[in-house]
Length: 252
Image 1 (cartoon, helix red, strand yellow):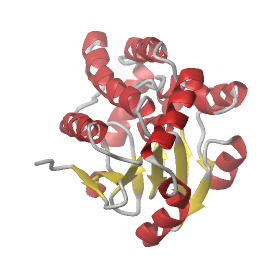
Image 2 (image 1 turned 180 degrees about the vertical axis):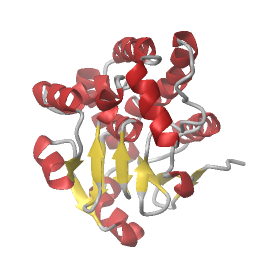
Image 3 (image 1 turned 120 degrees about the vertical axis):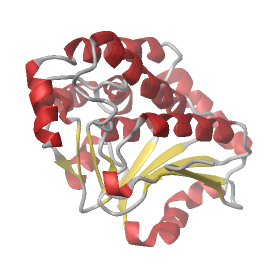
């Protein structure tokens, strides 16, 4: 039984995967990675129309990696091994056989943005903010999410998001195409039904066909190798003074 990942399937064939560590702003620990892998394996073998990923609470969808596990004292190889586990989770989501949706109940920073970008579509609480802020911490995205960002929005705008490493609101990210819309996270089920109603009208064969077309053109298998390169880049930067100081300051 999972401790930090809730997984369920509704009667209408919508699977919901919830990050359930609200007191830690749904930060990803090593245990959560294992539980995510297990939940995704269940979902891949289920008869679904789509997969929804969301977070518990109303503060954060995901604040990135848990610094108790992803701490700054890791060597380059230790950092690579730790980061690579979550890269594999993101790749599984990006290549999932059916449509995937991130319902961002709160803020998503750093790795939280990477996780959301692995999904096909993103809807957000309109009071939240989001950002690939890794560049302000002396590193780069470490789970392959930067690579996925180039697949999701205009490449020049993706480059700008990564280089500027700043926070964005929902209006800005809708303009960029990263967000498809907003929703009232306090009314999750009704909003889920509203947004996913076009999905429910279609057969699983239709939906799988549409996803196969998209993956062939915009999420090909070789994306995995490009994500690996990004993980390696982050691991090589891991032990620099700026990152170490930023992590220590956060923990204080």
